[in-house]
Image 1 (cartoon, rainbow, N blue to C red):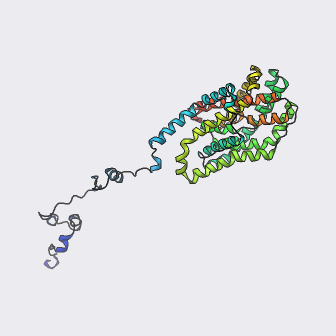
Image 2 (image 1 turned 135 degrees about the horizontal axis):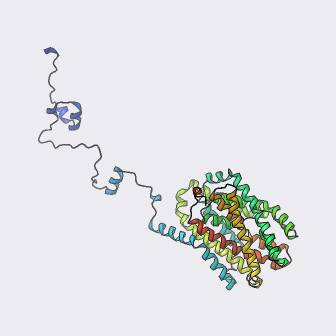
Image 3 (image 1 turned 30 degrees about the vertical axis):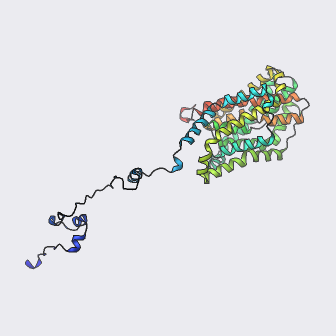
Length: 395
């Protein structure tokens, strides 16, 4: 048995050079775990020391010991946060800015007559670019997979508004030129301003863009057909011109914005606080320009034509939302359809009335329409922006 006894371990120079905690793990003998008096004790802890190192900021040490710090682009600076707050205030005050621009256009039409067609295209294009930056390609793909919503919006666009225009002109016994103008604007497709209002209302922007594109493409035959049946006159529409305008103002900027959001997120985050400024200013200036060009006719038309246009767009917004909900469509999409149905391309109505109708007064309901649907839409945008959709509430 003596031959099997292990000799005691000797403290060699190599062992003495090993760290103290390595010795504790290597052998259970307590006489080897005590370091010589001249050797300082090593304190081994499971967690790393939080004491800041020399030359390294303490925030970096704390960040390394805990969660990683967020990326710099995710931490808004003071200037960017201020821009976001101001943009939010402008968006909520959208009805006030539009109404102020329309009132100024009636009082001083020259204030908005400087707006050229090129300036209109540029302003709308930048606005649509900003809306596209809120989307991704997946959002557009999802909207294409919503045939029920697209079909319902298209059907309501070309039934609720034309029938409402016809019945209101009969009930109010409008003169022939005003009745023709009211029916004409009711048969026009959804306007690009509806996409802006949908964006400000935080509704389904992708669905709004596709609905505007679908109704605009169909306007090549739907607007002349419905206007000729209901107003008794044929209105010629240039389908290629509508296609080019829609592609330039709506489709191309939105697709570009979605691509930028998909692949250049840092750039989008940098410029996105400026987009509410551009959207609000564009709508206000365009509405003021439409009123300024027809200010004298609007002031001479009296209350009757204004009342007829108010009733027309009120029916569009109301029945667009109610009928969509009755069809089982979700709240966000129902709000989008309501905005699309209630807001018409009144600028197209003004152009068609000037080209294809003998009386210049036919364009007056179309010009008043630009004010009315903008005020309606901006009011709804302000309300719905503060009320995020919740289908569980059924409202």
